[in-house]
Amino acid sequence: MRNLPTKPRVAGTAMSTPNFVLLFAAMLVAAAGNTALQSVMPAIGREIGIADLWVALAYTWSAVLWVAFAPYWAAKSDRHGRKPLILLGLGGFIVSMALCGAVLVAGLNGVIGGAATFAIFALFRAIYGSLGCATPSATQAYLASRTRRSARVTALSALASSFGLGTILGPAIAPLFVLPGIGLPGPLFAFAIIGAATFVAIFVWLPDDAMPRHGRRAGRGAAMSYPSIASPVTGASVVAATSPRTAAPVRWSDMRIRSWVIAGVVSGHAQAASLTCIGFFVIDRLGIAPSGSEGPISIVMMGGAAAGLAAQWGLIPKLDLGPRALLLWGTLIAAVGLGLIVVADDLYGLVLGFAVSSLGFGFTRPGFTAGSSLAVSLAEQGSVAGVITAANGIAFVAAPGVGMLLYGLDPRLPFALAAVLLVMLAIWVRARL
Image 1 (cartoon, one colour):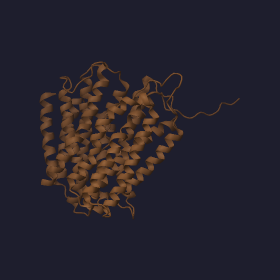
Image 2 (cartoon, helix red, strand yellow):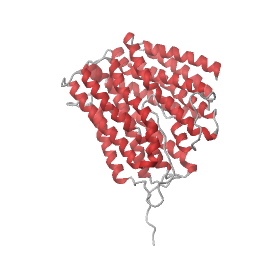
Image 3 (cartoon, one colour):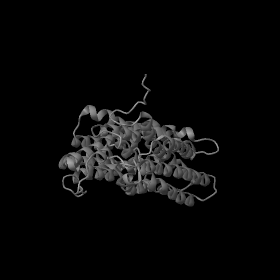
């Protein structure tokens, strides 16, 4: 009797490849949709006529909520089930994107005023910030529960790479959805539809993780940084998901990691501020109309995302640099890139400058992550990974607003001051670490 064919399975797991693809898609859609929105928001704000500062704050509000709620949902997946939380996060993404798109269309067509448009937009973005962060931790926990302990790091790293891929894919395809009749908010509706298709596929085809007789299998997820080209994958969430919990958590003030965390937070603020301002800077530096700026902005952002991922996935493994060297060279390279942005007067110069700065930041985050990890014991890895993830996200709390305030004084100022800050950080790293 011939054996029936079986579905291919992911190495080291009890999960079929199609089911892994569903988890990967859930993470990919959120990251791509978020960065697609980043590429069109400066143009939308200019078209509606709202101050650049309020555009940035309305958008980054969701990042603040993500930082606050991600640990909460990460702790709930085992109690409420992984699949329901995956769907909860995707549902929050879909509803938020659709409602945000609708209110931006209304604002662009003069149905409601600019201030009201962005106040309502911020309210609808809160849905994504508070609920969307449930998906990454739940997908990690789902995969971990079906993976041998020895293979979890590899499997979870493959899943986490979806965020990095999404940061390139989002800006790349966003201009394709700026369609007649809808205009600049088109990418929001497009990703809401893509997200809805992913939601249905997961609801129908992903097996429930409940096991009525024996409970759910062991395996947990961890909070992941806000999906943005300013938050490349560092592996911190993977470490947190695969390490044992400790009774005494590592705190930010711990002398073993304090200097590393300071370096990560400072460099993170420099990157978040420059990312917030870059779309507006492209419009002003190139002297183009907002309605035609989505293409150049997307090109600049794609160049930055690709350079950051090239650093982490290609250069760092080959160069074999230690944490201190990664931080030192990363801050200096990023400072050079920001300097190139300041003096750039065409699209090529802006792409080059943003790519070089992103390449440098692609070194700094793994540098402070590895430095913090190596500073503590094996039993404390999960705890310190939580600190690292929080440090990555906290840059979105104040940096966007400060960056836009400086931008209002002089468009070159946030990039120039960020470059100076990074040079000072490099000097501090050389002296202290």
